Image 1: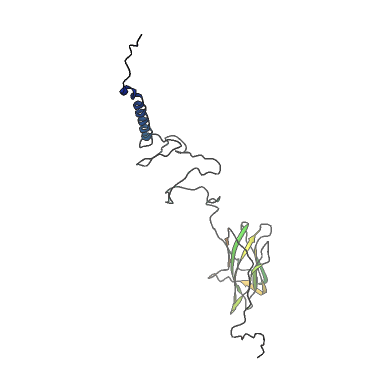
Image 2: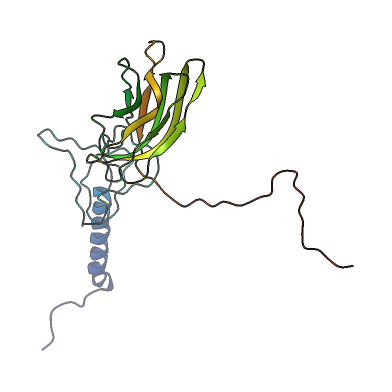
Length: 237
């Protein structure tokens, strides 16, 4: 007995593949549309827009929170262009307060009887490494010698003063380490003298913090004095 179903035509046999292809195209168009302006961001893929994307949080807290695995940056940029109003909390682990290079200045006291020695302390100086510079003006015709004591090394900035009339000046600088257990002091000694108290100039110590100090031994090369004749080994003719 023969079937009454008519044989399928080639046109009808191609209908299903055409419909599937159309669905794929429509779906791809929708995905592309989601990545365009005015549509949600797609995770795990690139998103493209022709205008800036703005996020606004009408509630409390930040408008955007980015989280990444430990050791991975939460944000990546493609240029070195400065971003206005972008504040960093720390720079290489240091806060803005820690990066301030505030110097400390101490004015030596004047007055009092003349003496053969003077020791000046520096109250309130925090522990750390400093470049210390002092300038001392004394009333004497025989200049004293001054130096800075250092907690972890011999004294530094040792200097004999220079005299002009009845006044003397001592000026020198050195790197010092401030240890609160044995703080830095300025010591002057010599014949009888007193700190100048005229009021037009003063004596002071200025200490500038050093965040990192690289120390290395110096090398010296010996040279003949200018004009000296070099005498080499004798030769026979």
